[in-house]
Image (cartoon, rainbow, N blue to C red; front, side, top):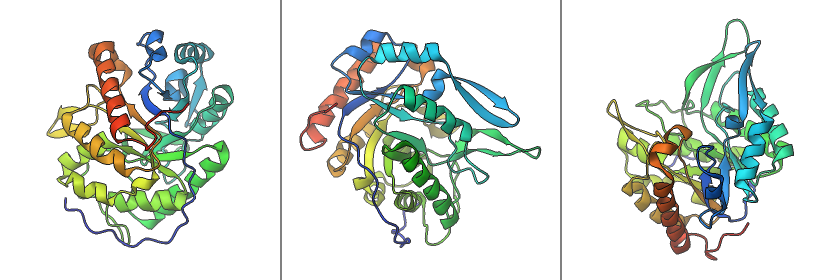
Length: 318
């Protein structure tokens, strides 16, 4: 894949909220001891609220019921750490409608545990059922690259901004489909993200491991890609680990951060004037295998990179 020059896009306004800097964050993992979240390693915690829910299908619609005992346990573990939310079930790009059940759950979650900002993936993962309602396709898929998608997701992002009153970010997804079609004036995935965040008046969560995955799998240059991203819109950065699977490097969140992603992080931070935090992502299933000691070393390295290359004041502020 050869990166094409930025195509002109419609002149949307840019008034997205910018969160205050926090510093270094980590996913909430029930498998890790509560003491881990009370050390000097962390400035905030990132929560995927779905893991505190009981999921069910009701008349073809996906519902998420918060489990009070799970919230209590998570709050006790995270203590007074600032909270940010990273959702996975909204399906903001589904043409027939996003997952309203996720938003109903997030309404209740915010009342109980307020968060500084929240984010979702720029993708879709549900499609309509013939009998009504929706069905999950099992994995997030990239959006069609046209202005119809830009306007659809942008309007939904604006609605989310109004609904929760805190900054909303969209994450660049990893994808494994080659030669995706794009319609003028959208030339590629970078134009698409820029247009959606512009129209949606929201920020970006820049997932550097997703960017690394796509560069490997689709053959583009990482340095050229960084030049195409509106880095002033980036409020949060994700790093993670992955693995080779069926000739693809996959965003598995199953291991430590690859060295090229560390290099990419150091190159990216000085160019993100509105960055509020960096999060190391790890899935619950792999947490015991990776272990607390290895995660601790990753977080210490993240702290060093933050203080060397991050916001000018260098200090995290809760």
